[in-house]
Image (cartoon, rainbow, N blue to C red; front, top):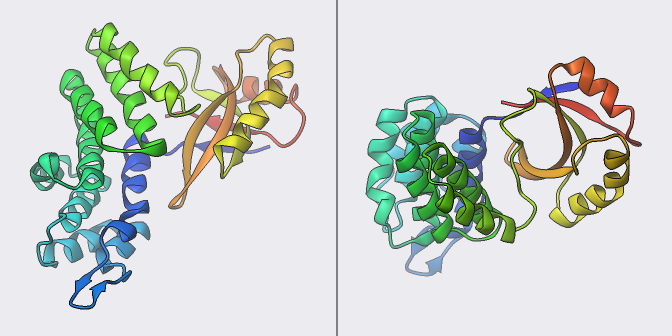
Length: 254
């Protein structure tokens, strides 16, 4: 049994934004597209955000704007949100859907931190429209959260429906407590769902909600975590974890 702290939403999505960049930004040459990863991407993925920013800032401007995206995300990861927005803003209308979507998502989460709920929701909505796969669901889910905070329940419901269609990627409810029980962490959504099905009877028997799947990060690798319940203290969560077979962990939610 151990206690872990969840990574912040901003850093989760910012890290995701770099995961597939090498496939998007192969260096152009007269012989075609290479798969060489620019130094600013490698530095960012290594968590060296200050160096990644300097490398991206010095990189020649490209048609896709990946260097600008990494510069903005690196600044955001360091908490320099105002300068990050300056770098990200020109990418809001990028012709590259993946670059545009990641920039919109990062901008949306910055605005969410600033409690600009309506604007944050719209950026995350736009990000969901541009992105695909799990990232589409993530952006839609957080867009729904911000619409809800802005009092726009209709749009919140629509975006949560989009998130649900992209698979079982959910966030914990804002009520209940700061701790939850993690029943496993998996590299594939299908394995996580299998764990949800296996654990559901025990959860119902113990009087808890159905286990949920949340996307988390391990370094630069996305994982699907299966979690259940929300508790006021780690002791309460630890006691609840004993009701489930297999390895469990108590997670503090941010």
